[in-house]
Image (tube, rainbow, N blue to C red; front, side):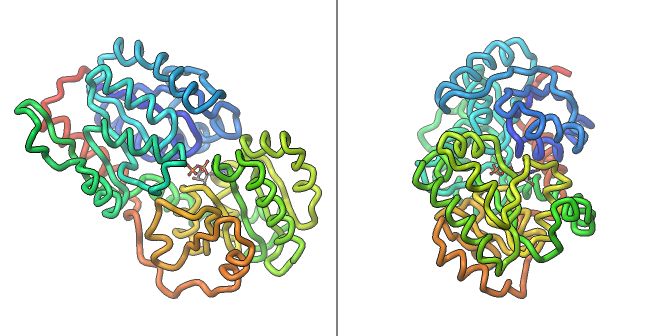
Length: 381
Ligand code: UDP
């Protein structure tokens, strides 16, 4: 069957790197890159490094508000979906590209496959949360990283046959497959944990530094929050108790720092190493060998857990609740005392496997095959 996959930003390239190769063993995949992340450091590097096939279509849509960006993507995707003879459209995660891909498919009455379904922060102020909820409610096959994600869907009535639905209505299928980012991390982390090149280049030693990433709108688009983030980063580095802070700067954050006139404060602060966004291998080496990770990223919370490195999440909610329940992740928001307390604590003794065993992509493809067979989706080759 032909499957049209829509990707657009960094974590989606990483997720697609896990799934795309396996999907192509059995199906004909057409890869559409919306352009949401277009610069080399956030896009091209992952295609080459992780062996992801070059996109078949490049839409080059970036910038603007979430609403305008999603609308432009939707307009561009409508004819692509209509002209393609794809039997289904596959989307990943929770971005504007995810929502546009899902809506374009649903509008064209093509089945929507959502990888990383069911994640919820229960914070509708997050653009990602709106995208997740909306995509899950139009999806036909929902592939969840965890049982708690599947429970979130059930609580919203997704996958539960509605008595009022007509005879023709098809109940969405929900399957727990594990997390496809974990597949990639499990493959790369053993090498990353032993790799010294990135640490040497930065002049930091294993276990003697912190990694910090921040790019969520709630942290960097709100000037007071951004100023607080800069103040606590510089103070933490100046304190010196935890070693220097390595901060690969997301372009969105760079832009906001420039607008606020704060980039030089951060870059000039003692003990703060600001870098460009790093390749997957280089960033994994930092995560695996850090004393702790401070982040507002979803993917990085999981990767820290897998690496056995304590994570401090710079938010007051998370979708990856199991990392908090196991004691490896602490929601510190931007609270200096909470950060100091979490950094002073000891990591738990137990670290049970969460989000699968590194074979989530295989399960995704199996679930897609079953779905296609059960629905009798014709789709062409
Ligand atoms: N990442 C990377 N280089 C960096 C920072 C992050 O390769 O400099 C990777 C990281 O390992 C993870 C993913 O990017 O796999 C997370 O992406 P991001 O934080 O942009 O998105 P989120 O997970 O928050 O949606």
